[in-house]
Amino acid sequence: MTAMTTASQALVARNPWALVPPLGHLDAYISAVNRMPLLTLEEEQRFARELKEQGNLEAAGKLIMSHLRLVVSVSRQYLGYGLPHADLIQEGNVGLMKAVKRFDPDMGVRLVSYALHWIKAEIHEYIVRNWRMVKVATTKAQRKLFFNLRSMKQGLKADAAEQGITHRDTLSEEQIGVVARELNVKREDVIEMETRMSGGDVLLDPAPRDDGEEAFGPIAYLADASHEPTARIEAHQRDVLATDGIAAALDALDARSRRIVEERWLKVNDNGSGGMTLHELAAEYGVSAERIRQIEVAAMKKMRAALADYA
Image 1 (tube, rainbow, N blue to C red):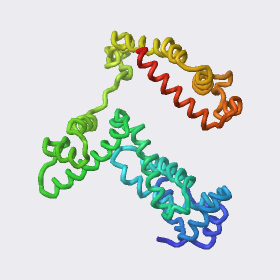
Image 2: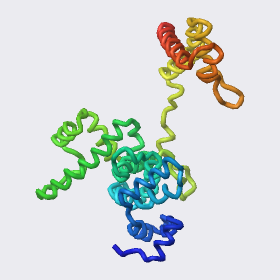
Image 3: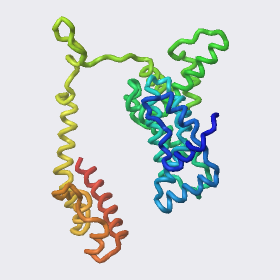
């Protein structure tokens, strides 16, 4: 690694961002961050304390700059999703900044270990939002299965190549069983996610054709769920619970409990904010805020029972 010149070191000391080109020049950016000096444990601790105790943004910048190469390294692990490397780095940098903001030098760990989780989490969120097949993986369990399944499929493909076996794009029944056992999930979940990952894109609303005719796509014959009988019945039941049901549940409360619930959950002021706070209600009734919270919890429990009976 080429050492930094004295002039460059002085420039970084004044402005730590000066030597980092924009992400539009990706090769230059990666080359620059790899030349950034690493911090010693003592320097890291000092900057982290300055940020935590004094809000020193210059110290935060030095902590971030010294770990940009970590983001580049982590982002390379996700190039197989077909998303721009620069975007992956940018999202990872957001995770790094969040980690630096929350880092406590008294935790007994280095920032590199603490930041790794935040960097990966931010990149995962970006992939989930943007990669075509992951948009349906909405729950935490589904996202975890998606990333683990993709990694395991790559491992199975590599093992097959070493053994001279032609590896299929889809998993065999035996492989599905192996994945399900190792990830501790149901076979059906593995099959469903495998189907999503191996599927293709379908345009719901195709672009107009060159001959001026309208293009026909699935959007033309998709059902309108809002007029489906079951959906309409469920929507009506929700509306009834939200009006008559809530009114009946409130009637089951004593006057103080009802007012607390209304102020805390049902009142909206002209500026869009809610009603009174716990401390404001506590001052009015001459009790502690904790007592108001206890009354609120008991009232909500009573209301849930009343709503269940009403339904």
